[in-house]
Image (cartoon, rainbow, N blue to C red; front, side, top):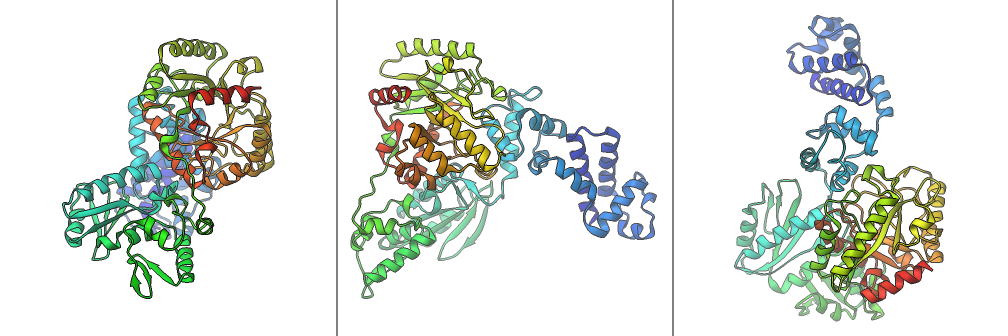
Length: 572
């Protein structure tokens, strides 16, 4: 083991000790050892073999023994023991500028944050800024640090990848010789996380377009450049691939680089059963290309209904299209209003009126406000008096906002025993109640399933919020049995939320098929903590498409009049 690696181990031990509040002299000894090892020119391996490590100024007997152990085994029992006391993700926080051990300890102990993903989510919910000793500037610095840390992580949230893909697409379209260009790949399919960006373009001058792409202002590195494709890297590490083909090949190339491997394989087999061949160059019959001006023409030539990109996952969609079934799926413009939004009453950034007016300006007809309940002290949960005060303000705003309504709600914590956070007399006057688990997510399957089902059975629960508690790329779903929960929601007439926050996208789209077949209604909720968060509903729609949901399956596709009646019915 190199001395730089050993120095890093000692720095790690010091950080862990400080997080745990251990003896400051012990902490300082390990930090000093790390500094000495980083700066010394001595051959520590030779000194260790001679038993002379203590000849280095700043290295005592105890530290020398640990260095020898690391040189011989590559590991240290003390370090293993410390790791058992501190979650691995907590140590990762030390790599973020602005977060020393004391601050990491404060975040861990006061917010219950144990991973970088949870930390980023806490920042987006404005919780770090309100923590004593932090503030808005520290929160923004931490967010920037997290983005840098994830620079080469390998997978990206759909929202982040989409933003960069749209930048890349706009640049490609600037070239005068580009006839058509679109985003393909897993972004077009609406996958929750993606590895890279696929752009497909058509032009009679592919080399010029490729060169244009390689010289894009966002391209900090050209990874590959050939006749087949050009690949560049954004500053944050995300890779974008451009393929440029003749315009007659564009539909099949776009199709080929949109579908999953499973879908493309199934379609290849299906085409062969019809005496045809399909690849990225075209659709062929008897080795002759069939004219296909767009993707719709490809499906028509194969005798299939058009399969939307989001469904091209190889999960039986070709058989459905073979039976000439039309995929009747929800669209973003079908949304009439939004539920699950936060304000300054709890951990939101905006006032109640600001959020309502922003929602109205986006063209929506209603907004469901659901700030955190009193047990969520980390998020400024509302006392009973605060909830009443908010309700009074909502009444006044509803008198002012012509043609728009704010619904009174709350995001009630599901407590450890499955009860909700307020007594029935507090919940009864509300228009809706979202029940969500925010704590003790590590319960075993039976306990957490029972806990959530008990909340679903509460007569005042309108919706179940982010049911599995997952945070994409950072926290796995809890061990809940979602099949049992879905059945409970069907039995108790409870809506299941599709949490559209890009970090959650919960429930998983695979489970939406089960919910729909069970007769459970879903609601696409942005979980917005600021105005920009209202637009996250579009990601909820993307995963709802993957889940095969139609307009009729989604609560907030209802008109204001209909959703008012629907909420009233569900209260009975």
